[in-house]
Image 1: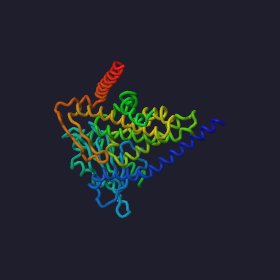
Image 2 (image 1 turned 90 degrees about the vertical axis):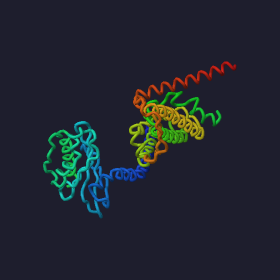
Image 3 (image 1 turned 90 degrees about the horizontal axis):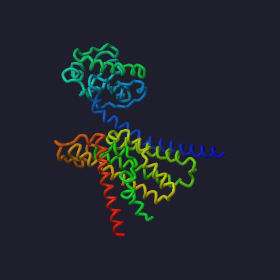
Image 4 (image 1 turned 135 degrees about the horizontal axis):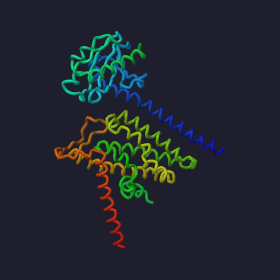
Length: 173
Length: 214
């Protein structure tokens, strides 16, 4: 009898704690999401226009190790495309970049946020316009060319893009 | 015990870091700069005040056999609330403190005060005890981080925890001669060791004086 009483007391305490937590979560979650998007937005507007709305999406992201975030771009309620924040391991460390997959089935944009760990003059080419132009405009799923002299870095980027495509196909198609 | 003594003992006589040597893990890890130390101090103080008050209020109805699990559930809930609030309102601080915010749950100062003080004393006394201990902790980490940042980077800086772009002060004194070791964990141990030695010296000197006057 005693043990039941103790278990019940603990259950009540845990239940109340859960209720308090969910109340705090409800208040803070929108602010956290907003702050997260605000910090990313300066990069997002390089790909989509600033007038568009961005919404963070979490669905299924944890199944993909390289994907750090996913943002849905929409204007006036209709979805225009999805921007993925990807971090893949290059030659010297993590290369962080955004890849945008448009609803019309093409790569809409590619912006490198950080490739400072790559060898300058070689791996750093993944952050240059030539590489960007070789991606943007292609159809999603087309094979992308690596850069000679920067094979490891560009392969890492392409692997990340493939993960983004896999997530896109699985969740938004 | 007088109310003011309860408040004061946490700051000096029973300072959690320098005298009781509780909660050393976070005190060593987050004291790389002043902003982190103040942010962590505020977070720990907030959790400590809330947990002491709640546990003191509930001390008569919590069954003795399961008091520790109940304390832990209450503390964990409060820490998670503080973590969510920090993530929302102090994002930069949240990033730089990282895993040490959720680890406040296992900070022995908080469970220690719940078990040793709040579960045996009234609400007002527990509140004063929590404020004293919280201020004592904050003071201690601020002192450690002041020396670590000064020696490790050659200057001291403080940013507004609620808005990381707002600089309160940023003084560089001898940046060219900074000893970066002091921003590393080993530097934390060296700094803490030296400060503890000074605190012990002061304590022994004081007790000798008291003896001599007898």
